[in-house]
Length: 231
Image (cartoon, rainbow, N blue to C red; front, side, top):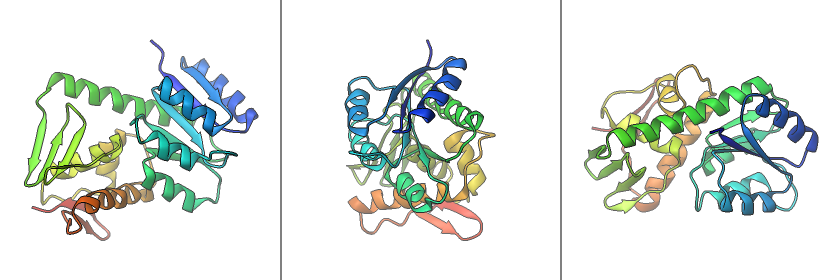
């Protein structure tokens, strides 16, 4: 069965050209020019992945993502304008999995979509093969089968990317993971994302844990090297 990709952008030319490229690769494409319309559709019939433009009338991509994340963990790629670095960082902190700057290569977008879908499939296969897959590190509990995370008994709602990053760090406490290793853990091998993407995900992770425990400090930064989960 073909994977379903939702495209949300108020630029009809972009929707048309990207739709043609994706359909040629075998994807089932749904398009929306309005964020509010897209929210209703994506909630009622969730796609396998969504590509969201940030700047749209009525409901922009940021608000759409925020409301979507209340009920869904589907992979999300943001499309951002060339110089909107702040938007990129905000989007990642709000739970986007990746971003691509406009103007963009359709081939690059397709490869990023495939990488995120492969990751989702692998996560499902792992959980199915080992339904009891659990990691416990002191007050941290990660349940791979249910994609669930808790800290000191309090649930932490994580996106797929965030969950994979925590798991990669917690699997070997005390061992440093550089950004390339974390990219591979979260996105799969041979997929490049900017270092800033990983840093933004880590910042959002810390914020989520600190929301339930202000003293949380388990994820350590080693400047110029990477990150580690404190022993």
